[in-house]
View 1 (tube, rainbow, N blue to C red):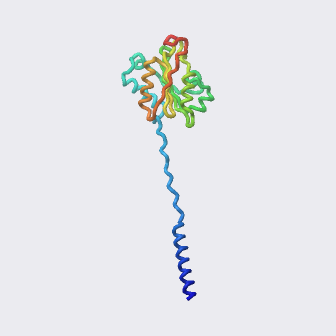
View 2 (tube, rainbow, N blue to C red):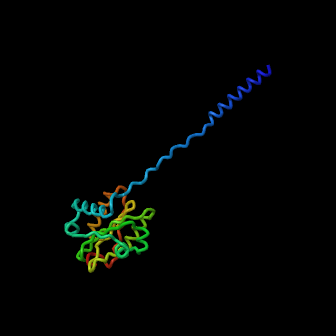
View 3 (cartoon, rainbow, N blue to C red):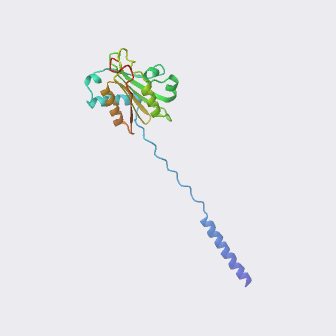
Length: 200
């Protein structure tokens, strides 16, 4: 009788242990989900984006012909030799923060007009850099003429700098915001260059 009792007790214990082992299977690790990354403000090379920005601004017909349409411009990369005058950045700052920058500007000094598109490196504080550029750019770098207005816009890792007629600056920034896949912000530099105006 005792043997039967021991046998039954052993069977119950074995069943309990098997059930416990079955319930203690390791829980599978959840499959990690990749967080969606922020969309880039623009796609393409900087010179291509700049060309589209200008052409679509002209197509809007929101600016006078003499302000942009009839100004023949050339595109030139901004580099360590020109960054101080155009962007107000030292060569070291330019190298550390800027991935690429292209300026659209007329030949000669008959127009105080310049549009620069800048792509910043990752991890750069774009808002702070845009503010630095707005304060550091030289509105009087067009010979005897001076830009009427200086407007800087930024979105994602991109900055646009426009030094030109006020209406042109407004139109360029509006199109910059329209083309950007993310929200843009604007900085208007206070006119602090000898009274301003195209002739200063």
